[in-house]
Structures are given as structure tokens and as C-alpha cells.
Image (cartoon, rainbow, N blue to C red; front, side):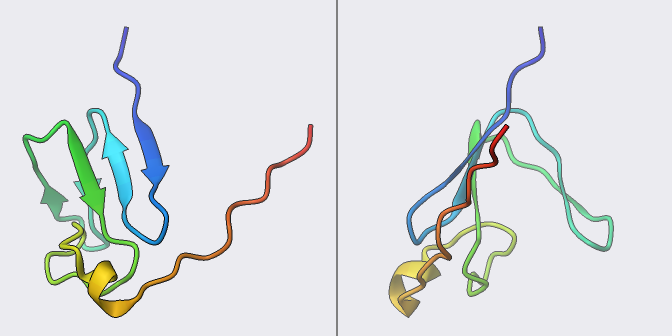
Length: 72
């Protein structure tokens, strides 16, 4: 059975991605990491994009409202 990938949005912080993933940017470049969990920048200020470098805590980044649950 394949491992499950979980993505968690931290309050006013990065997306935590846990599980086996390949991260590819818009130019097709792949980013490899040996970590089981990676933090992806959500504020746009990281100098290590697409990865989080903690800049969100220095800039006062505030995430958008929580996603609306779909009915059904």
C-alpha cells in the first residue's frame, strides 16, 4: 500500500507536507529533499522558495480565512 501524503496549513505559517512527494516549480525544476516532512512557503517572502525559511513570523503574515467546508 502506498504511503499517504498529508498537507497541513499552519496558522499564519507554512504548509506542512508529510509523505513522499515530488515538488516541481513552474519551469519544471524538481526539488529533492530527504526529509519526511517539508514546510512550503505560503507568505511569499521566503528566500528559499518554495521552502519556508521562517520569514512569515518576521513580516506579520496573516493567512486567509479558513476554507469553507463543502456540503454533500
